[in-house]
Image 1 (cartoon, rainbow, N blue to C red):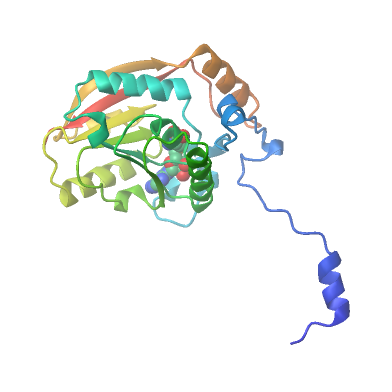
Image 2 (image 1 turned 90 degrees about the horizontal axis):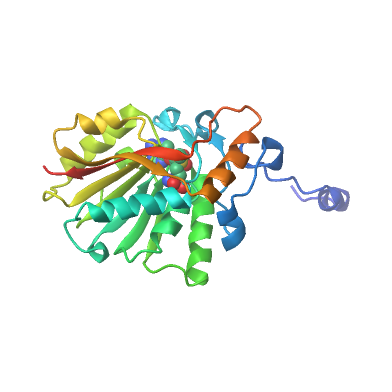
Length: 259
Ligand SMILES: C[S@@+](CC[C@H](N)C(=O)[O-])C[C@H]1O[C@@H](n2cnc3c(N)ncnc32)[C@H](O)[C@@H]1O
């Protein structure tokens, strides 16, 4: 049906509907931008509780929350991983963030000479924001390696061939972690040492501990820098529901697939 002039004028004069942000990403939800975002002009700040990450996927109710890794903890984990004598030089490893959110860990990983950096994220809005961040990173000349973001469920994702570092910042509960490991064991033939798993805020540690193909290389607390502690404390104390606590460290572990 043709639109009349009156209707057309009405359409033009109506205020444009504001895009609704995911709960946890708006100023009214207590959003405080992390200094990392302010310094580099990217968008990775925000705290989204797991219940607000539902997308209608069978695994979405196992999502813990969206929150980006403290840069100092990320770098601390890479230092510890490199001390664990990786099987090959870093430029032969693909870095994969499982539950990559808006991509802060990918941006940080791209500071290292990995063979490639790959993110897997279930929520399409977060994956879209991450892609924009990756583009900004490349445009600023900060990426030392190819970067890519995939919107998918980790439990259905197959690892690329060659040595891999899988990174997890407490993204989901034990059922998804088990499914993901089962899928890897079925779909992949790893040579011993070809897969290292870096697990930050390792709530589901027992799943890795009990896995027959994995051996622990590191277990301990990785401290936030004073600046990151301050930033995370400021962000977390401004949450309206006060659900999450700010700590000066993260409990972490590193495992190696030994087959
Ligand atoms: C704590 S955030 C970590 C963000 C990012 N790794 C970082 O360090 O900045 C966890 C992310 O995992 C995602 N996630 C949860 N379950 C998932 C699944 N089954 N597949 C893919 N991503 C998932 C969530 O949507 C959330 O963005």
